[in-house]
Length: 185
Image (cartoon, rainbow, N blue to C red; front, side, top):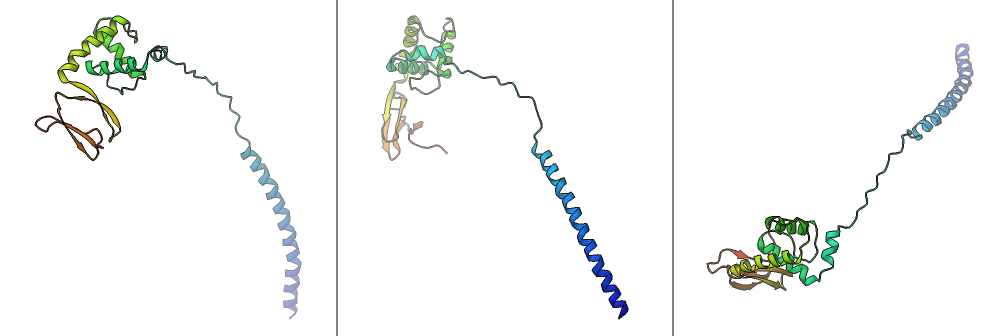
């Protein structure tokens, strides 16, 4: 029994020693943690990168075409398609592709590639397009059901029939066919 009391007294005396030792270690760990946070929170100082601002200026060629009436711009784009220099959308908006088509036409004719048609070049474009337009019978068709406006070679595709998706244009033999409202998958 004396041995049990001695062991119990030893444990009681040792418990406060362990209890005092533990709080002393905890504040050290707590003090170290904020220092670690401070080191992690501080970002590395890097010299500021020099910023180069890109200023987008409108293309003066686009602005020169914008001064023309819409009907004239559409006619130029249509003629460029007929002669084979333009493969874009006929909207009257002269983007980079339309200007490149004008330059291609000018180059083909041996003129200076300015991107803007002068009156003589406009006349050349129109006169080059007319025989090709007459040869294929190109005409502009508004397909209201499909919601599109397209150019159809009516001499190559004289048959027109209405389908649920809009119009269908085909040759006398039935091939080729053109379905403006049909979605291709």
